[in-house]
Image (cartoon, rainbow, N blue to C red):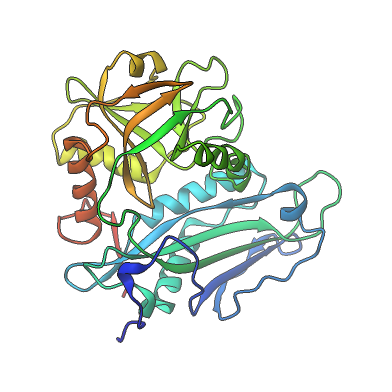
Amino acid sequence: MEKKNIDWGSLSFSYIPTDKRYVANYTAETGKWDEGKLIDDDKIVMSEDAGVLQYSQSVFEGLKAYTTVDGHIVTFRPDENGKRLYSSAERLEIPPLPVEQFIDSIRQVVKGNETWVPPYGTGASLYIRPYIFGISPVIGVSPADDYQYRAFATPVGPYFKGGAKPIYVRISDFDRAAPRGTGHIKAGLNYAMSLHAIVDAHKNGFSENIYLDPATRTKIEETGGANILLVDQDDTLVVPKSDSILPSITRKSLVYVAEHYLGMKVVQREVYLSELREGNFKEVGLCGTAAVISPVGKINDHGYDIEIASGMDEMGPWMTKLRKTLLGIQEGEIEAPEGWIEVIE
């Protein structure tokens, strides 16, 4: 199989249309999802009054396909993405796609675009974006009747070019999610409301926003696009706990790696901003599909800089071990736990 003639190392994290994408449709008339299929056309045609355009009825996922050290093309824990998409859909009154169909759709998309999967060792990967949206006309405030599920793929470069350098972030004055709202699901509307905050952060020299709990504004939750992990002075991995935090698959995997591969103690609990100010944590990282872990070197709290002990020069030792171990599992260099790696035949 000959790969596309691409300078894989120069790819950015941006959209490039590939050969195939998967489409399935749900109609109220049939009351079920059709069997779905791969298509060539990357354009979507729908009513100007489609539910997704009027009331943002849409949920999505993100995962990657890799070429392993032994030449196999694999995906990482697609069943977990399927379960999360199912849960997200239920929350927005979208008919959930069966997890088995989701996994099959990912397999088909990767297989249909295998020449776009970057070679091993390039640091690049094939990013896969599955999503469901209300496609039938909706003028009154109500769920759509009909829905479309699509999954496309695009090759992306390494998130960090030249190594994972610590970033400078700030405590945000905006709220990411309301109490008992939709912060725990992967809905497009959650990300739309964060756009102004991230643009403003970038204008002021920060890479990201750290959001606090909206009820008391005293506890750390997550950023606009990633969960937060911390290492305390006793080398314990601390995972912020809140009903508003999106259950990240990368975070779940890193927690397992910490406990079972690195022998770390892991605690999931509420984390107070005051603990950061008091220097209780020597490492802080943002975790997600794109970067695995982005190290945080400094946090600005309304003009006061909280210096993380690991500093602004390089990723701390524990975050480095966590990131390298998970990447090694994904790329076939380290034996994976059972069920984590889906080989695309």
